[in-house]
Image (cartoon, rainbow, N blue to C red):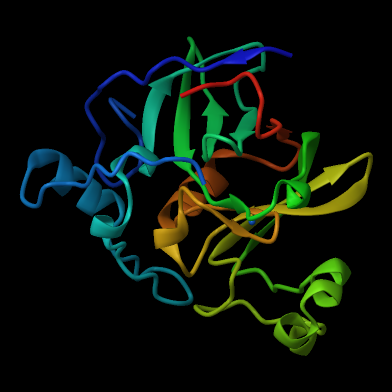
Length: 228
């Protein structure tokens, strides 16, 4: 499989629908200038959500590099539309669209390369406000931190999975790898998680509504061919 990402094309953003006209690398430190038209569009996209079982606060966009905010981009791939391609090295997840385009989301990934899943899987389960349970490996590595949650943590505003989770399975078996929200949006674009892929809460809600169970997910190696 060869995946080659082009530089993204500037385009008009849609309103709050999220469509645009639709677990560290050196980062660009670009930040939004308050009051500008792009800042207003993103403020709407990442505003507070009060229609959920638990409130989702607005994102402080001053804490996130603009290149990790959601946008539609040019994307060349052999994968079919509807596939999710995760590039841990670049800190992006792509939802492949038609005609050489993709919806791109900034992500946070595993703090050590060995924690990261690689290869192909499918989304076998989706959950809203999911229960979180640390894996046995997480408990063994950091028993004082994770042992108290061995029985699981109910969904809610403090749950590290956030408002949505997409569960990846391979050959019918749970990989324990998820795409999910985060209570720490400022960590997007970094290597921080225990292996899963975290998105801004507004972004995982957007991705969740776009993909059904059975969706193919391809996770590239961190040193893969795809480039920014």
